[in-house]
Structures are given as structure tokens and as C-alpha cells.
Image (tube, rainbow, N blue to C red):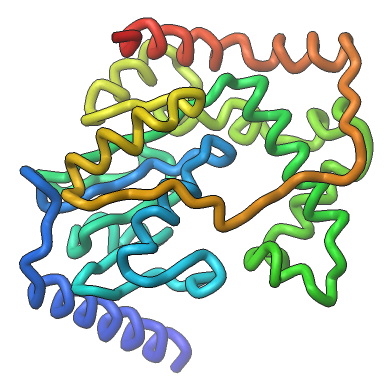
Length: 261
């Protein structure tokens, strides 16, 4: 019975998304849809928020919804099935790119970040989650209940944090383009994207995405995460992290050079 109920729910959901999308003529400029490969701690949520604002939604409104609709815009989140069907204006997810088959005429992009800087940002983010008052935490972080267990890895020093992370977490940018962590394979896969942006040149991303979307996108920080405690990382801990990130840096630096202009 549970399987029948679940199957019925997804059938109705998918049909609704199809009808909503077919019922509007709003499309990106030159494309049918836009998709972000959302890599954690690269400012991807700020891009999402800029799009969601056009549907009169923000991260606190959306929480775990897979479908966002407003102002004749259909937006999809974290559903492989919906993303691959393509009935949306904008979508994003943390699903590795190698595990997705996007429909034709999809403008696909991602934002990359200095690998060590991304790891430190993830550490600080988890530290911040641990500091939140559980009784009011969802007011500041809507995903608190699903993140609090993962955040435990940041309860000690940075070295212990590294110990607790899987390789796919440490080298998440590389992993998104190669499940074998093969740099050449990842670089070849990245050629399929329409654009690759960099977190330290975030305005470039917003400016280009505005042209593709045909929308005025305003950068928004719907989530502000800054731990109260000072973060101390020893030289040895940094050196160890850099050793773990060797292959990801090869991937990242090659793309920075390729997209330097």
C-alpha cells in the first residue's frame, strides 16, 4: 500500500509540474531551462535565492519542497526525476553531475571555489549549526534538523573534522564530475557545461545569469552563518588538508586557467 501511495503522489506531482510549466511561456533566453550543479559552500544558495525571489519565495518558505511556483515560474530542487524531465525554468541540486542526464537545451552551470577555502567554510558552517539553540534553530537554518547530525563532525578541531569526512565531501568539486576522482575525466566532463563561474568572482556569475534568465537577479544571503567561536587551524592541519586536496586543486586550477578571460 505504501508503494502505491508513493507512486501516486509522485505521478500527481510530476503531472502538476508538467501542467504548470506548459501553462506558461516564460523561458530563459535561448534555452528551455537553467540548471545549477550546486556544490556546497560555493555561494550556490545565494544564486538560488536570487531566482526564488522571482517566484516570491525564500529559503525559509521552501525548506524541503521539491517544487517552487510563483509568477508563472516553475523551479525544481533536489529531485533527480523532475530535473531530468526538464519541466522547469530553473533547478538546482547537490546530485553529482555524472549521475544526471539533462534534457537538450538546458543551460547548465556551476560555481567553484578554492578547495581549501571551501573546506574551511564548511567547517565554520557546521560549527555555527552546533551553536544554534535547538528551540529556535530552524528560524536561522531551515535545514537544521537534517544537518545537525552531519554537523557533529565539527565539534572538535579541524584535524578531527578532516578525519570524519568522506573523500566525496573533501573533494566534492572533483567528485561532482568524476566518481573515480580522475582529474582528466572530470575536466572532460566539465566541457559539457555552458558556464563555470568562481566564487571569488561572484558578480560575474550574476551578470551572466541575468542575461540567460532574462531576469534582474539580486544577490541575496537568505542564510548567514558565522560561528561565534574563533576558528583556529594549525599549520599541520592545513598541510594535511592540502595534501588531501591535491587532485581537486589540479582540477580547479586547470579550470581557472581555462576560464581566465
